[in-house]
Image 1: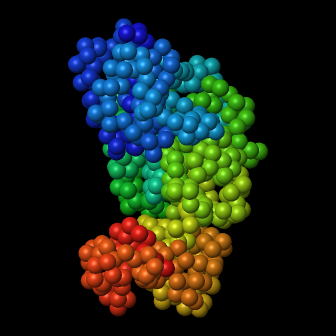
Image 2: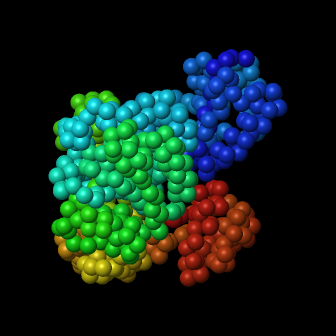
Amino acid sequence: MKADIKVKVCMGPGGIATGGADVIKAFKDEFNTEGIKAAIGDRCFLHKVGCLGLCAKDVLVDVIINGDKTTYEYVKPDMVPRIVKEHIIEGNPVREWSVGEDYYNFHKRQVKVILFNCGEIDPEDIDVYIAVGGYDAVKKVFTSMTPEETIEVIKNSDLRGRGGAGFPTGLKWEICRRKKPGQKYIICNADEGDPGAFMDRSVLEGNPHSVIEGMIIGAYAIGADKGYVYIRAEYPLAVERLKIALDQAREKGFIGKNIFDKGFNFDVEIKLGAGAFVCGEETALIASVEGKRGMPRARPPFPVDSGLWGKPTVINNVETLANVPYIITKGAAWFSSFGTEKSKGTKVFALTGKVKNTGLIEVPLGITLKEIIYDIGGGIEGDRIFKAVQTGGPSGGCIPAKFLDLEVDYESLAQVGSIMGSGGMVVLDETDCMVNTAKFFLEFTQAESCGKCIPCRVGTKRMLEILDRITSGKGREGDIELLEELGQDVKTSSLCGLGMTAPNPVLSTIRYFKDEYEAHIKDKKCPAAVCKDLITYSILEELCTGCGACKRECPAGAITGRRKKIHKIAPELCVKCGTCFDVCKFKAVNKI
């Protein structure tokens, strides 16, 4: 048997959901059956690791023998015995189960900084993190750099906040540093709430120490002795691994009293959020940490002036902080070598929707949408026509196909009516209704509005009522103009970022897909055949074989016809459930 063997099982969100724990158990059981020890020398060769990226093919398993790696896809427990016997014992990889060219294409265009060690190291073992250079950045700033020098490196890197606003991180730190000495705080914002987003969650689950290390460096730079990680309680695995990582960091002396004998004290506390989307906004987050209802307040004063309990406070999101150790160890010039003139570095995205290769990606800013969707994502699922991509979560905009060559950076996305946000990217195809898409995201933001300010509380409600009317076939002349007027009013007069960006999906879809709104209002038709009240089902006589499947499955008894004779749908009885369309094997049911 080979001496240097490693097996890495994806235990990120996708890996866990598709049975990663059962796969690990199967490997352990098989190792016992075959008499293979769980360690060779001092190295344990069966590891649970964070997200391996291509979630569409989970459970992913890496088998590495003497540095030669084979990655297996869609691994189930019953596949493990053969992998162990043929590959690990006999040295012959099971080729029909290994990943194909699309897996390598998925990774080829990526540049991994934040995700470099996600999927490579055991997130619950600090020694593994230290072995790959972990906490070297903390050692460097404490032993050879002043707080001011540390801030200067971050400023020179041009790192911008990855939580959505894109504010220069070094400048934020510098402003807080200049406040008079005394109690200061640093907060990690891990309240990731966008539908379909799992960037911060995956980083915390796959490499929590990188975030802790970034917080320690930030605390040293601004002069804070207390930190909080504000994380939603719906992320139990991330919370568990974060707790483990914090305990290990304390044991090693990286957080606590008199760090590196420099007289600097710093500790971190976890604060669980209840899942309120508005608490991603800085001042609402601060209120929640203080034990109050999570509601934003007017700014100024900004948190760096008066934040947690009225003290100067820096708030950075997970990805921002995870960048910091790499910038310190590799230098500002290295980091700023990636990206564009105004948007430096890389960005992590959750690539989801109607794309073949869904998953977690990290790309240099400035890459085009086309490269992300087609080169990395593998194109549109079912080879259908690409229609739009929604970036920035529920507060972002829908970008149409004509902008496929658009560079992904803060400025370019803003110019076409969208935002970077925290990194959600939802791909839409020809089967998606843009009016319904706008309604879906507005439903989310309207429900998540804290209700403090009238423009957001009332304005989004009225906009949603109009969209409900349009998608139910009751739209009327002037609705489009009214949506635009209301949207602009909500954007310009809302108190916080939630309200200021909530109309984006509506305004961007009107801007680029106005014809779909007009079809809903004037023709009472949904071009994508998505809006239930605007769909009509009928049976095509030339394709109907009279098999009776549609009749048997129709819950409303709306279909008539004898066996082997043409069937018909009674419009007055049809409840438009779509069952007949789904069960017909001959494509005889027409849906318009």
